[in-house]
Image 1 (tube, one colour):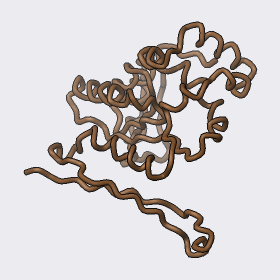
Image 2: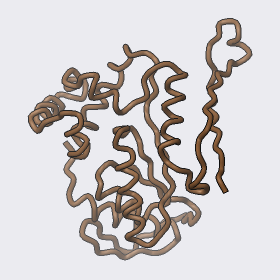
Image 3: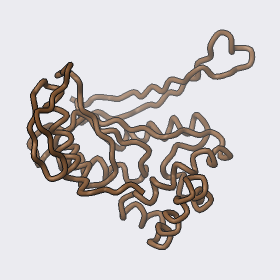
Length: 231
């Protein structure tokens, strides 16, 4: 596996250095995990935003304190609120607004396709926070077994991952049920700009490309959420 030496100070230092380099500074830096001398970018880009993706509570807190945005990618859905809380707590400690958040995951309509993502769940599960592993019933013995199997590659460890450990990380079902579940995520978390707004309607519309009309092959889908703003 990949060694993680002092991940929290490393993330904090990497975010600071990245921002300074993008701003056009010449950086001398003596940190806990990163050391630089006379470092600079040939083409600085002050307008580039710094985004971060992670799962560890302390690392997410560091991202909340420094990043412009945080990607909540392929995480345990019932714990999304916990992940957001860590980001917000880091921002409060730094005395700054919370970074923007983007949530992404995998959408599956066909349960038979779970095998396609099973290998990718191996390292995600063993690296999940202890609170998530406890909710899923993943014991230290499970973690050791999966890590040992991963020495032979992710595919070798994939058979150790049951469906019930995968499903809480993805959106699985019909297009309509997936659209409703996405709507539920918005209902559970208030809008930043209008904190008193309430989601009152979810509309799901399938769009077909002209050449796909006869076969009804989906081109894309649009999910529209309607909010009512209370003054």
